[in-house]
Length: 465
Image (tube, rainbow, N blue to C red):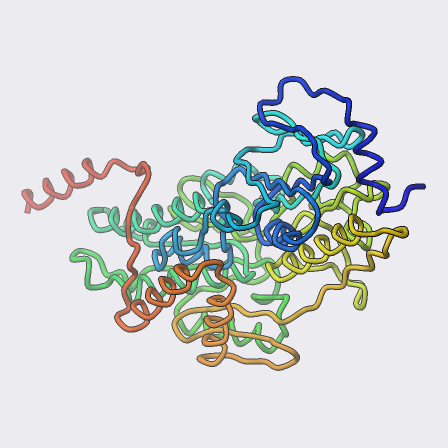
């Protein structure tokens, strides 16, 4: 049995004469162990940053050229922020890290026996592999709902959601049929977790405060916002008192809460809640996630959500040089034996832990240094509901209202990557808070409805009068 410290050199010697045909990327090995990180999210970025002083060559592969601050993605969807406010080019993040290289590409497969990562531009051999590819939406076996009920995981998702939200009001303004107009002004969000709660709160504020004066033929304050949650309360991961308070705050804002109910059908005309049909042209999904399909490519054991079941040091069983981190890892908290949640702080802690583990391996001289056991430190939970409305549980203390909202704002600002992002987000929040206006109300993409026809219909109706 080889020690962790011996692993890079031994496997490097075993492969140094191998030739890999067809690779367009230069994969010539040097004297340094190669660490390949797949995914530039919270976990992957922390791995790369954590190895900045280590004697390794780091290659980060991501299908996007940017690192995304996902917790604020809903604010792009609701026109508070622009995509550039919450995203940073990955190359810029690591431009000063001499041992890091960034590749734009999509990983296709792995060969764990030969230590190879295959991606769309070729293949790369590694000494250490860190899979941090994240998660995607789970429709619980109803993938046909995806088109009618988009989720919120990427910038493209947020822009599509923003397009649908803003277009709904534009179409309603030009719609003469009352039933159709009501359907356009009905928004349904499935899932009562942080994303669902933040989204319905923002939707209600847009309709009630941000845009009423912008339209002439419709009253946007009558917009119907429905949140469907299969459980008995929103934010079930929060302390029950805060969860109940969040629910009451949403109800006070005018959000309809449907607890203990499940969606049975979603189509172009609305949603079925049990046996009840609710006409709604805009349905958004925030009910569940599943692991990236890349997890299955490893050929190892996974849980029901497709996450890789990892060892206590976050390595793959029988593969001490392969790690899985972030939303893709199924790992339990040592102290509580409860699953580590799929949240940004957990992903960042995993990334830092793995970086330290790899650094210990490659720096060991007299045998392997113990990697230790990953222990998730829960630093609290928080969710914003609306303007000066939030809930937060930090270190055993519970906050709500303005104090929680200020805490939420400060912490999210601190976690943004760039100084530019911090400045622009603060400015956008101040502007939105003071004047109740959303500064990023741009409809992009291809409208699903031809507004020219609606305009003509409205003109004809006015002539008939």
